[in-house]
Length: 306
Length: 274
Image 1 (spheres, each protein chain N blue to C red):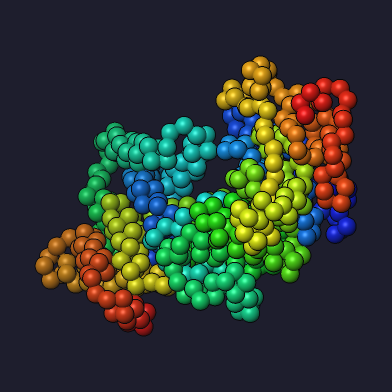
Image 2 (cartoon, rainbow over the protein chains, first blue to last red; image 1 turned 60 degrees about the horizontal axis):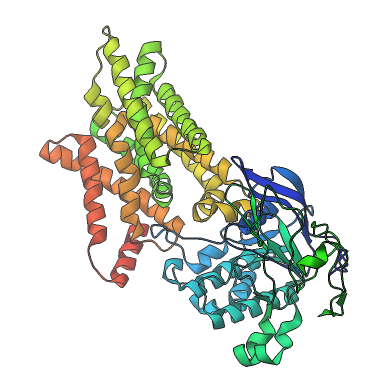
């Protein structure tokens, strides 16, 4: 994770210092990350932290106010939006939904529906699908076009726990079979997909990033959620130590209010900082073979936070 | 046969209905019925300006309708008032300004009823040519833009993320709407354009399985409404434009009747073969 140059070739997409402003308010600022082939990057963060804004900037739906976005030339994106309501007046079967943005070979269409487990619903109108079925249909549509990068904005919302695990397993399978990079957005602050290579926590800026700790191997976790869940989900344990106020100022855990974040803000025990996480904080933990090592005493101010 | 005014009216009406079918589908899919109404109302301003500057009526109506739709896009981008409120302002502002301008021009006498409700029985051979020529042009453009238009109707975000240009498609759609309104104004009149756009498309929904099928069905239902309306107006001596709208409404009401799903599909097939 600390090695930013991926073994899978050059990144599909790279964001550098991206900021998006609406009116006089910054929705996100100074966001940077990249997604490489086969890599799964999960964006998490509280409501209004700029996850969807970041994803939309990555796909090109929004233009960044500052910073830049590099996409590999000819990059094919498959996108599953956060909210989609198809008006009843539009007759749209699952089969017709598949070819929404481009023609498909019949075999690809069927294969994608089968991969998503909704081949039997090809003829159904999308308005009649349940929440989980509709998410699967959207996912099938996105993968059928064989994208290099799959962008999934809260793909498990409105899906129950078992459905969530099944969807994550499906996403993993897609990654394994097609080798595409995946940018995943999750509303859940503490549980992410187990195969996630990098978790990025947003709070108007990159608050922190790291790998999900391998908590899924812990017996308590298995007992709680069952073995199947343990394979699909992992904990990303962290606490925010500051809140962004509506006026742009920052409320710190100790009650102080400052005009902006400072290096040293947003840090919390139990996760890893890497070199470019933008916080200017010395690393508090060292990664070793995907496991957290005992904390290395950090020097300076940062130690007080940890 | 073209010498017969009734036959010319029939030909012109059918040509128009075939053109408005697919556009009307987008109007209801995108929830733009009020937008279509606003553009139709702005036609009166177009008429007034055409009289004031002695320019061609269709050109003037097209330019004004296109300008109003562009103005709407700009105002929406600026934020503030909702699209709904903006439409309400533009719709009645253009109508009122048009009427005020006409009132100032004491030297011309304007048949307002003619413009508001159209006079399909008065179409000339040239009108029929313009309607069919313009109709073919509009339908060809809709066919070429079909995929981006439909994709951005379902989700502008998906379309944009996957390399399409929803804004461009929207702009093209608005210009096509302006063109159809310029063509249609003389036939069904300002107040009935929206009815020919919206009602056949709404009636087609029940019998359609795909968007493409709905577009074709809307055209056929619109054409059937023209035929029924014109014969009705001949038989009962009623005004032709409103009679067409009433015929379309009756077809919509029929589509609401609670016959079974199978029967609906059969009806759709019958419509498709006609």
